[in-house]
Length: 216
Length: 183
Image 1 (cartoon, each protein chain N blue to C red):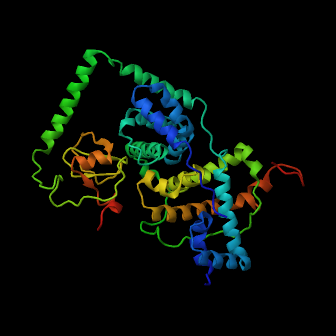
Image 2: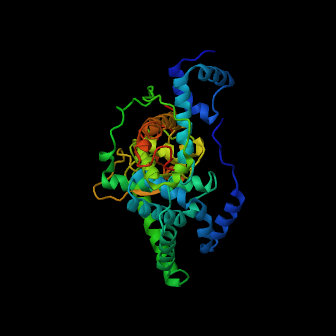
Image 3: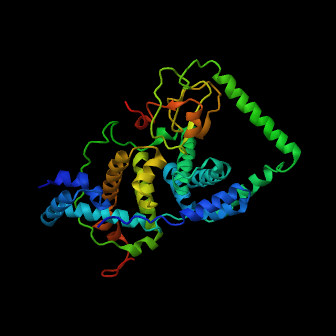
């Protein structure tokens, strides 16, 4: 029942591309970055929670990856390095905007290792996967994610949305593997608590659909 | 091995990652068979992972690709003294100026170890490509945004690779990068 982990593919191809870009074939950079642009954007969005800023920072990060490509020495994956740059750019932007002052109130400092207790025990075993086609439902997911404190949001995003390995996420965020695991547990349980009403008796049953017809 | 509900909640995430010992896994599975509440927590956490991991939950805005490709093209055009003698001279002069100013900034460091501070502890296992911030008079490098970076008013901090910072004698900040320090 392990969560699927992505397999390493294209590492050699990427190294070749990077070498060629280094020798002046700049046009190949688009090919190198294309598979990860969504990941870059989503990372910036999760940190900044504002689409315009996220677009700007993500594009800035990609440009920075290009100008600093010579500093990439292949000790981690290119994608991890790219996300690291994105995280750093986003943190700098937040700092500039003093966004840390507007973070949702999390738990008291130092409580990270303490136990998080689930609040809701309703059973929502059925996943309405088609629900994802509906924009209201996607909005519910984004809102729930945005309600997490930043340290949980960034870990959850890299691991569960972008499927990075725990080690890669720890590298990209410059935190320990143990912290990634603790924060991931919390993020998953908090999101579960936040979303549970959507699946049990809450939001969906209030939609204006006739009895017996499924809204999705 | 027997586990209670609280222990199960603490390990639910590692259970889903497949990162627990076979003993613990067996104990948790036995617990799930009897405990509806914990099963609900497990199913819920798994659903969260599936819903968000689906790829449809967050979309790339239209025009994003064109946006960064445009910026890149602009950047390539902008740096276009490329190839001309004047351009190269300009670049060489800039490099000389920058490295000269670092050399000056370091003149007053009387360290035999090559570190910028005699008392500092060099880090271990810092990823070379991690991007960090440093200030000219500081002795430590930081995660961007760390509020313990000391800098002069109006000074622009530099964002450089960790390997570069280490080469220049900086050591990890004891607050934001303490995992790379032995104590």
